[in-house]
Image 1 (cartoon, rainbow, N blue to C red):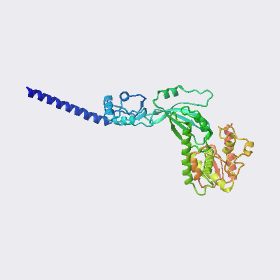
Image 2 (cartoon, rainbow, N blue to C red):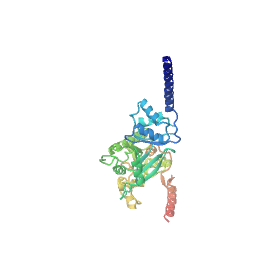
Image 3 (cartoon, rainbow, N blue to C red):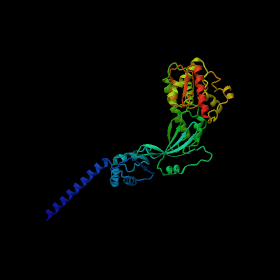
Image 4 (cartoon, rainbow, N blue to C red):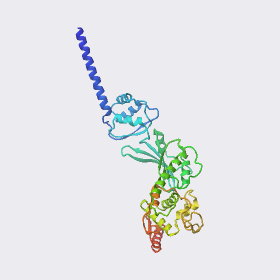
Length: 386
């Protein structure tokens, strides 16, 4: 009798151990096995969410086979208390272990809403975008103008921001913006704090896209832009052609700003640079309209009209129709490519250029060729104004 009881007990224990061992083996394999998710999703982890809440959300999205196993795995690996709130891209087929790594390691959100404060040469806009997990591309949801007399924030914008766990924020500067425009724009970015005591030196800010966080100071953002520009300028100065007729990195930056304001066509920058360099070598005046405009506006916004003859003839430090060399400071913030074009211009015989009607320019070696190009441009203008 006792032998039978002991035998049955042993059998039961063995079966139980086999079942437990099998369950552990299944759990371990399933935890690191490819998941059932067929298309990438954006997983939102809000402040205060628990692993159980995240696990349920994942099951609702068909991203995991077992919320319980996800919770057990997080506990077993010591990551239950390590959740980082944010928006995370979960790729198709992600394992539970990989998903847990993603939501506990933290860092910048990799999907969800992105709010971009775009600072352009002629306008400022605030754009809300959302990442499409399937395509991996951001899609614009809403946009508004923060400089309008009556600012109207679209409902889609508010809904996206308020419904997102952690929106990403960016400030994007277009190439050729002035320092005054950047300062003015940053003052309108309501997630930033502090003031900018004075307008940064013209040309000292690198046009690029900068990720920022609520509470960052405006001064710290300016410092990042300045450090980036300093690094780019230092590299360009070190790599410049030896015969470029500038005496310092500051003069190189001034030349780059003229190039930036004269052309928006990337392929033309080094050609435009060659015209300015050839003129400097020959002692010719640069005769470029953007310098005259800067002398009028001081970089505070756009002129909004054509130049008058009296302005082209006026004696100002920035009027390159009157002065014999570069203006005293940059006239905008040039980007990396314009700076490199100033440092390494094309070798050309050109000393003239004029708009060609396509967004680019027609270049010429002689005044006769240039006058013909100007005549063609005036014909194009006349046709457009009909």
